[in-house]
Length: 231
Image (cartoon, rainbow, N blue to C red; front, side, top):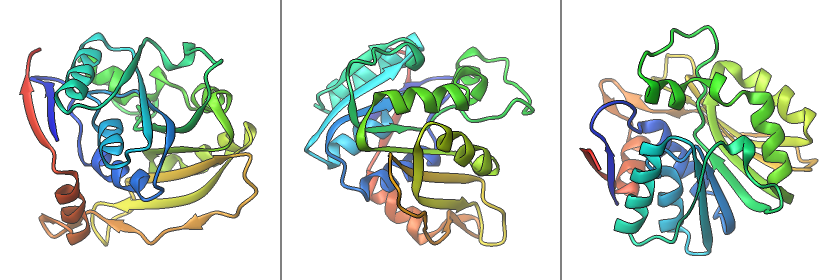
């Protein structure tokens, strides 16, 4: 998949590629909404590999709206873009899946002066409480919310999801190395589920200085080719 990205500022990283593979394991179909689409990488990869997906996205940064819609067109993927804040999206339309690699740097993290980076990375731009409440309003009954987040906030995530009747049913922690603490968590959440949580085996992303075999396999499956440019 050919993906145009900004020459400078925020570009997608391994979090998005690993999340795509995690989402793909659930064989999504139906109406799928990619929240905070950026250049479109997560949603477009999911739609490419799951032909029964009807892909929509929401993005508020004008530059990323251009990159995402261009990437959809170049890769010949049907795409409906909602321009603006996710929190202001029309609630009359309901979704089978909501997917997202949202901004998750917490309040205490040092902030970037770059506006694009600030919007893409820091959760003050999409607070957890508001984010999850909106997700719960847009999901069909017994439908799915799949996203990644900062692993250190996992307890807070579960508490806030419970408040809006969303339950984590699958979770996988991503560790940079086998002897390092988890830096990322990927979650599969269902609307109104009573299932117990299934904790997957840890995902180790690096073996020494190289990507682990699992990470290499995911990148090979994704087959992305990125071009940094101004469009």
